[in-house]
Every structure is written in structure tokens, then in C-alpha cells.
Image (cartoon, rainbow, N blue to C red):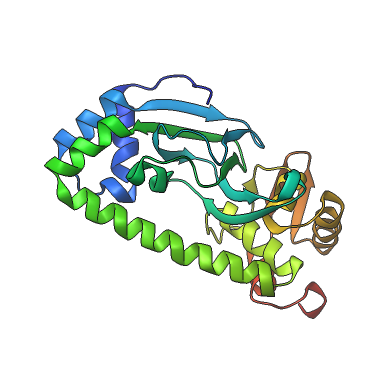
Length: 238
């Protein structure tokens, strides 16, 4: 992992208070975590950790998105299991059982994260049991999302999967003009397409005015059209 510029304790406390795990947490909890939280930054496509790596703790997303995936044999392919966005945490399985990482984590866009080490978090679960209950709820929700992601990989078409990912990376916003900072190669990884196949769909959408493309970024100009595609309509039907 590569550490980025450290933020102030006040800034880190504000960031942590927005995460679902720490909503309405006592000020004392946020102060303790902010004191020890380590800021990290990753560029698009950079690996955060690999399956089998030793766990150093829980990671909280400040900005950007992280792709959680399982590599295929000899690294020829991968199965994308989840996409983690701002104000979410990941790495919870290894945190709870102190085992190795169960999947790869790669920056799907430029990411800013906070690392919360296991030795700092576990004592808080003893002092404030509600945090442990909330972490289990987050883990359950993550499993539901993973089930949906795997269902999409098995049954949804490539165009539908690509539209869903773009909407997710846009933060669920319906505001036209939203810019998504990620590469076409990374988008292809997330939906199980080659870069060429990804470019074919994106270029078709650009010709229709749904999006515009520049190297390393995509701007969405017609969220309504992308949502219809995500629901199973083809671009030719819109």
C-alpha cells in the first residue's frame, strides 16, 4: 500500500463520521480512530491488496471506487464480486477472522482511503458492541450485493452490465454532465469485456449523445438512457 498525504485529525474524524459503520458513533470513538487512521491514495488500476495477503485492517473509502475481484487461473481472467464506493468500508472478512485477504482489491478510479488497523478497531468492538452489530449488517448487505453482481455476470448482457457500472461509478446521480474518472480497460475488467468490446459499446453511446469520452474519463449526458439500458433495453430500442 502507498500512503498519501496525511489529513488532519479533524478532517479524518469528519470522514469517518460519514461511513455507515460509524454513523452516530460516540465522539470518543471517532477521536480514537481519527488519531490512528492512515490516509492512502491509489491511482486508477493500482492494486491495493491481493488475495492471500496478510490483513492489516479495515479500509474506508473517502473518494473513488474499489473493485473487489477473484483472479482466474494464471491471471487470465477475473470474477468481479463487488464495487465499493465512497463512505463504504472493505476488508471486513480478514478483519473479523484475522486470516489472509479473500480477494483482490484494485482501484477502479483514483481512490483516497483510510486504513484502520485491526489492533485499533477490535478493542472498540468490546467497548461499543453496537459497532460489531453494525459491521455484521454491512457484511450481510455486501453478500446481497455480491449475489446480485454474480447474477448479472451470469445472466445480464454486456451492454446492460456496462450501463450499470457507469451509473454506480457516477454515484447513483441523475445529474447529466456527471464525470466518471476511469479507463476503458478498467471498465472492461468490471464487466468482463475486452477493452475493444468496451470501446465498441461506449463509442456507440457517444454517437447517440448519451456520453462523451476522453482518455481516462467518461461524461454522462443522458442518465435516463443509461438507466433504460441497465434495465435490459438495448440502445437501438431507446
